[in-house]
Length: 263
Ligand SMILES: NC(=O)c1ccc[n+]([C@@H]2O[C@H](COP(=O)([O-])OP(=O)(O)OC[C@H]3O[C@@H](n4cnc5c(N)ncnc54)[C@H](OP(=O)(O)O)[C@@H]3O)[C@@H](O)[C@H]2O)c1
Image 1 (tube, helix red, strand yellow):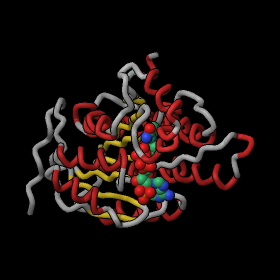
Image 2 (cartoon, rainbow, N blue to C red):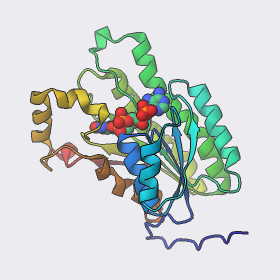
Image 3 (cartoon, rainbow, N blue to C red):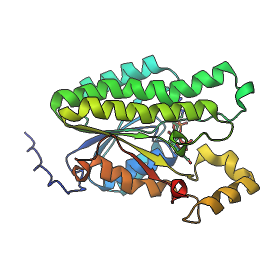
């Protein structure tokens, strides 16, 4: 029988003995957060559209992690996501999920008047409905056990309107609201629910913005840090919100934006 790990002191950033489920971890911010949680000591479960996650699995190993478990589900299909998450909770009975990072997300750029209904639905399904579909069963198990950490990746567009991304903005405002609603409801059971709002980060999500030289430099010039963010810039916030160091932080949307919102 394996010995239960010592409880971490309240200020600890260690995730030793913890299991973290990260969605959308094949690339970008999710891949960086998965590797960062592994470096802090967590075991990983990766939930992704398909099982081709070699680069992330390798990065986890490079950061001292073990062999991560992989669960597949297409986030465009919230019912399938809920079934996969429910199964993951059942399968994790002996090794429960302590940390959930809701990272999978997508964006479709078009003026509101010409946004197709299918594009609206797709973004809302991936960013909002599937976040809910994972969080409900995983969070319910945390509530039953009396502890857990849920981190959702929000956006600057949880606060601002954005330019020609109406479904994305609506979805990210909604995940910020859901974060607060669940913090209220699950806080008494020892579950902290927070969000990270990344600024402008160089990933595939922002390829179109960065391809427009004028827009890319206008964005950079407005960021007090004077540069676009990198996926690794989100790791510190994720480890903090996943660890005992944030036990009294609940319902917070933590901007990691190089100062954008302060401007
Ligand atoms: N980059 C930014 O500036 C920025 C700013 C604010 C918030 N965010 C948020 O940060 C999160 C990560 O984005 P990113 O910048 O790292 O973008 P990214 O490089 O495009 O990564 C998106 C991730 O989400 C997954 N995903 C997308 N659609 C999916 C689907 N239908 N089913 C399953 N997985 C799906 C992708 O999986 P595949 O690899 O299999 O496609 C990928 O792993 C998103 O929630 C995004 O909205 C990003």
